[in-house]
Length: 225
Image 1 (cartoon, rainbow, N blue to C red):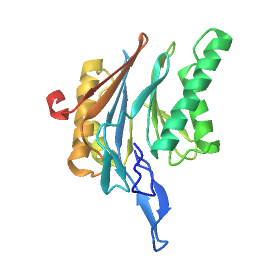
Image 2: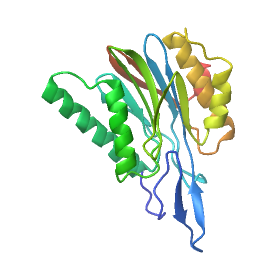
Image 3: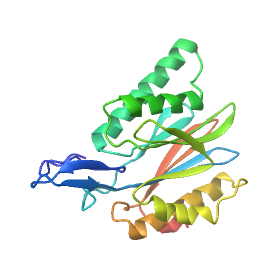
Image 4: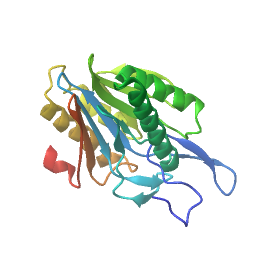
């Protein structure tokens, strides 16, 4: 995902001020990530594009959601290096907790840990979605770059968030099935990719239930609508 010809790291989402040649700051943006909680589990959807400064597509097949816990997944949003390091750190801590206590960490504790890492760690422009299932049910959290942790029925992050939110607002309901949530998440990501230059090139899904995490990808979002 790194590009030798550019001094900037590919961007998955969020924002980061970096200097241009004339020392004027430029905001790097990109990505649309969606998380929806249902009674039976959580659906997370992301686009597959990485960009340089929101102007050049550096990669068209980036997996922006990964499993970090037996029943939880996290999106990669921010600079590629920072997002990958964030994922590795959370996965290690989750595994260590389970090894020591012989039980998985609760999703709320995992979200709190993610917020602590975002606030105090060396991660750049991290604004991921964490979705998981535990004994208390299905959970979706957004983690902001300052370490804020907010749980909601559904949430969106990235430069396409306004477009995706518009697609979600009118159709979300508390009694969605997993399949209905997948379709709705696909519509939200598709709406963002139609107008947001930082989002596109297909979709990744993570479906999280009490049985585990299943991740799949599609090159054509429209076949899911």
